[in-house]
Figure (cartoon, rainbow, N blue to C red):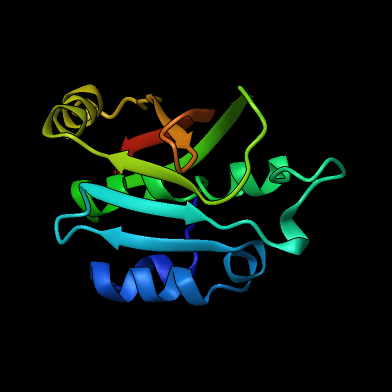
Length: 157
């Protein structure tokens, strides 16, 4: 598996946030990365309501809800595991719980236990496919959707 040239470059959290916020798909959908912690263990992402990300009934388009969560667990685990590991997004599912209106927020957290589990599970060269969940909340704190992301993690040979 080869990864793109961007994966070979080193970006700190400030530059990564800046790049995400300039990325045309995120800009067009109204996605704003508010924070990426210096250790890549915490990120806050918002989806603002715009004319172009509303669905037929006036709530957030489901594709925008899913897309705002897409790269974060992968990028965060890549930065916590280092260059000796291959990390890919493998699968994602979304459960829509209620219509989303206004600004939605997702908070991503990578714990030391998550990193330790990935290291231990891949120590002998095996692949590891953990699933991590993130809740998307509206301004009142109500959960609008839950997204589960399954990663593929393997130690490089």
